[in-house]
Length: 362
Ligand code: PEP
Ligand code: MN
Image 1: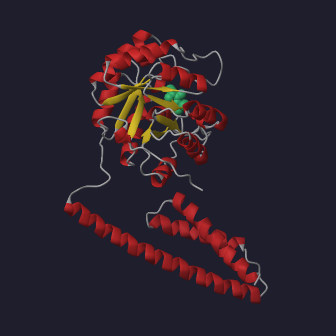
Image 2: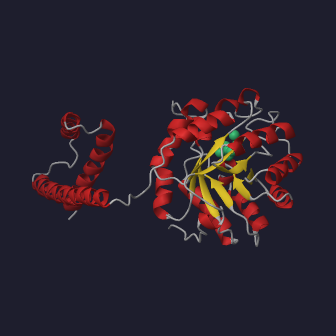
């Protein structure tokens, strides 16, 4: 079952919100100089509304740079005082929440390694009971949609209504150009279920290297995501964490300038009427597809009866192999991908077997 989420529109908590909301700043706050120099350059870009920095860094192995801790909150507070940007910091436990509130951090976020752990999420939610602060929730490191939803539900239950989701991709053993697989179907499903929930894409953690950031960012815009969180460092080559994926403020500016932001709808009458025309076409084609599938299942029923009368098994592996090969050839000639066919054919096969089984047992 999908939970109900009570969401305050993003326009009410980000002054002057305009798609895309850009969040930028270093993976980690490293020194006062680095934080302030980065923030000053980022502010010049004008499009960045929120400054991010990690204060406590969840690292896979101990001994790597684990963040500067509380002292860094002073530096972020200075960013808030000196610039017009809001500030956001990752929290992973109740103590982090308490400190961020003490230093006046504007927005909190839960990292991917926190969302994966309902105990930690609940601890944070309990620390936030009765507090009016926006919280952004990254997807869990593993591709489990329910954990992402569950974390937002826990926060919503204690009264956090200024919620956003951050899509940062998923750990995978697959060979891939990405550090974390984007698996776009997850943010798409989230957007479909909760059209009011803002979704911020994090191309930095998906890409894992700066060269892929423009591509991922553009895809996020084409899918109507609400914003981007891009790790930005005054000198990425010497960054203490995620050096390969951080961009300079200059590069961030270039990436944002190149971005094509499309609207979900065009106001033009001609556009609407042409789109309506295409949609009608799709509606009638869908009707034909379903009619044909239904006819196909009708024939399957006849075959099932015939096999029953003649005492023949339902499954005949050779026949199925030859169907798959023929269909793949035909589909390729029609411009359909193998990948698609390899998904849809087994579904049709399973349904045919289910129908024949029903007949055998009737
Ligand atoms: C981060 O934003 O620096 C971070 C640790 O991200 P994630 O939780 O997505 O790994
Ligand atoms: Mn990072």
